[in-house]
Image (tube, rainbow, N blue to C red):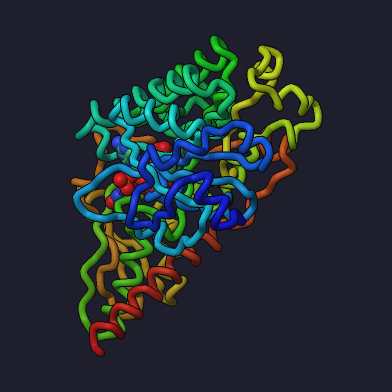
Length: 411
Ligand code: NAP
Ligand code: G4F
């Protein structure tokens, strides 16, 4: 823990989650001597209001002594729900917008981070057709801006960009590993594939510790509500409540329920991201001395690897639905085909799921199945949460939330 005195010397005034640390207040953290003496690392994490960014903050606060700056953009409505539980004098918010190259350069210049973890993105594939340019600028152009600022102001900063299994798109073979070709099917997938290329170009050209993994789908209780798993877990909680109150439930409307995804727990993956950013601590063939330097050598950088992270299982949306309802003891049967297919409650005969073609996409990734053997072997890692446990965790959380809201509403 930083003492009050030290923190004030080092970081300027204390802020809380409602306030943003001004860059001028952070100027003292540029004192390299003090930083070395104290032996702490400074980490910038973008996307901290989202799922992965907020879990990454939790992970680093728990497992390291790092000082963390969470990048947040200004929105008209306060959206820091995923950060509300954090109370630490090692966590600060800083104004940061990926679509503003000045903001990116200014933050990196002033804070001079040791690590930059970029979880911010326009991450919703379905919207990427509606906002193709914004998706491109947020997910790809901004990555170039970050790399350029790191090159100029902090070349030994380690950079991680969250790549995606969507880059594999229309897959050529299963399971997909690091050698699978990039065949994106959406503006989102294309933006991540392009970001991957520029990360590699900067890594090779300037010897930056800059990497991008392929993350297969990962979920949890902080997952955005428009993604299919959370839409289902929240819908199941609502329907269970409606049935218990004797109300005819409104079905959950979905699109392609035959798509297959490889789902993991976000909390498992943030640990892996930190491991990838510190490869020399885990991969015995690397020489740690080569990574404790102000400037990395070509040899050190060439030895870095980029990895697939996945559960190595695939399930249809239908399987997720069946399991989610079963968690609350609701069993159903499928009837009808195509747009008329429905999931019917065996007990009440109410329709639980129906299809709405508005949720079909212009181009679909039908199957994702990862092969994360390389990462598992190199880092001696296995995931903590199974598919079944993940579904249970999400449904239990949303069910408890539903019950709490109901109790509040009748008080
Ligand atoms: P998420 O919950 O949607 O979070 C996205 C974050 O990005 C939010 O904090 C959002 O801030 C921020 N953001 C968006 N536009 C921004 C901008 N212009 N400037 C600054 N911040 C901006 O996403 P996630 O599921 O945590 O995913 C994290 C990363 O992993 C993303 O890059 C995603 O593409 C990638 N990924 C995710 C998965 C997955 O299954 N979850 C799989 C593969 C790759 P606001 O709250 O202000 O909107
Ligand atoms: O939950 P989804 O929206 O996730 P998607 O498209 O797989 O993308 C997620 O995973 C990617 C990694 O592969 C990330 F890069 C990306 O940032 C994001 O986190 O949709 C999953 C599947 C799709 O096949 C979709 O067509 O579910 C299908 N689906 C069916 N009905 C639906 C719905 N998806 C959504 N969001 N809403 C539906 O009503």
